[in-house]
Length: 438
Image (cartoon, rainbow, N blue to C red; front, side):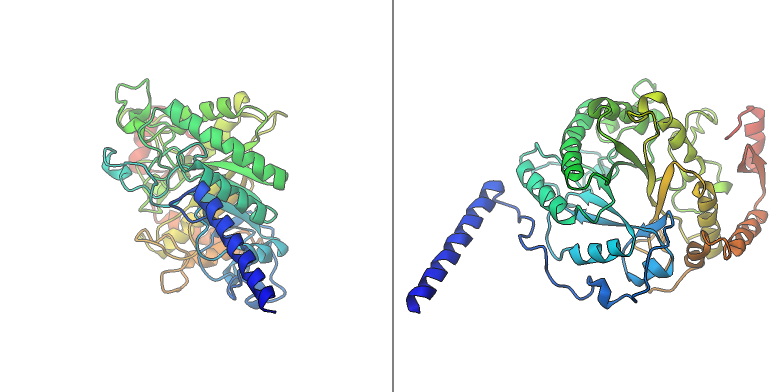
C-alpha cells in the first residue's frame, strides 16, 4: 500500500511540474485560463434560480447583463451581452451560458484584454488615453502566445453557447482598445491579423456564430480626417474615424471573412436622453448641417450605419448586407425618468422593423456609473424605462409606451423635418440651408 501511494504522489508531482513548465513557457508573468472549466457556482446554475417556464421571447431586444438572471425573462429579452476577459481569472461562465442557451437566449460575448496593459507605456499618450479600459488583443505581441492560448481555451469551452462574438471593444478609440501611438493603417492591420485567427477558431467550433467589430461614435470627425485642415495628427495616433478605418478592415480581411458591424450610437450628448431636442445631432455644427456626412454616429442618425454598409464594396461575397447590431447604447435618467423612458421607446420605433439591425443591447440593466443609464437604479428600484423595455415590443401592451412618447414630445418645441423631430430654434437654420434629414 505504501508503494502505491508513493507512486501516486510521484505521478501527481510530475504532472504539476509539467503543467508549471508549460505555463512558464507561455508566460512567466500571467495566470493561464483555468484548466478546469466546470467550477460549481450556485448562482450560475440557472436551474436553481429560474422557474422551469423561463424561456426566450425571441425578441431582438436585450441588455448588457449585470444582475439577476430572472430579469432577462421578466423583461422579455431575447438577447444578453457579457464581457469576458482573456485573463480567465475567477469563476467561469459555463453553467450560466448553458442555462441561457437551452432557454433560447441569444448570447453576445465581448472579448477584451485586462484593464491594465502589459508592457505598454502610456505616459506619452494624451491624458484620456493614459488609463485605457482595455488593451488590444494582439496574438503577435510579446505576450501574444498567452493571449492566443487563453482565447483558444475560451472558444473550446464556450463556443457552443455564444451566438455573437465581439473581438475587442470600440476599436477606433484606444481609450477602449489600447495599442500605443500608431497610424491608422498599422493599427488596423495589427487588429485584423488577430481578428482573422479569432474568426477561424470561432467558425471551426461553431459555423453559425457571428463575429463582429465594435466601434464607438467617431464616424467622420473633422479633427481626425487626414484631408482636413483641422486634422490633429497627435490625436489621430490614438483615435480613428470609422469611415476611414472600415475601408482598411474591408481590405485587410477580404471577402472570405464574414465580419459584422457592432455600433454604439449613444445620443450625441451622452448626458441627456432628449436627443430630439438638441442643437447637436452628430453633424459638424462648426460648418453646416451635412445630411450626407455625420461627424459622429449618434442615436438620431444611426440609420447612416446601414446606408454606409450598403455600399457595394462592403457587401458580403454573396452581395447581401453584413449584419449590424447595436451592441451598446444607454439613455441617461438625469433628465428625468419620463424622458429616459420616452427616448427608449423612440429608439425602439427606429429599429424594430429594420431588418438590417439584428439586435439592440441596452446598457444596462442596473446603474453602473454617474450617467444613470440603468433601467433600475443602484438600489434595484425600477425606473419607468424598465416598464417601457418590458412592454415596447408587445403589441397588446405597447400602446401606453407610444402615448408616453407623444406626451413627452408634445412638451417640446419641435417641428418635423424629413421624419426627424428638430427643435424650432434649429429648424430655421436647417430650412435656410435647405438641408433635409432622412
